[in-house]
Image (tube, rainbow, N blue to C red; front, side, top):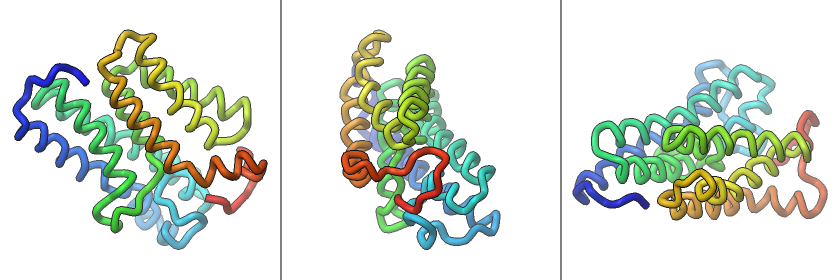
Length: 205
């Protein structure tokens, strides 16, 4: 974490605002606006872009990625501009937690990968870009989307060190642990050799 220079009241405000912003289920909103139905009754029931893609609407899935990344980035940028760098990290983590455990959906949210990327891009854009590149590398190499997410999450703390941002390590560790927890089912399928490949239709979450 960076040096704490803001008051605890302001940090708590940043956390609350970040959480509420992160809790907005953009995948569900976009699906409903575009007449695609209730995501919770489609495919895996997840609110993220992967499940939106199962509706067959690639545009809606792309918009979900953009908005889910955007809410993480906006939480960081607003906290940084209004309070400071310490609040930026806290707001980013809170937005990520909001996506995973949204209050509006009884704390049943997504897996957080897009929001994670948005937070990293806003905190330090080179870190965000190299994390996106890491995701693409593993996803394209193995042709498994979840492996891209897992590889990027695992590498994030290392990239933080190599790019000279060791003050982000605690944040990176929390992101990595939570992303792996949320991908527990995917990890089990990867081990069993049943995780769907990119480009193949499969109803697995």
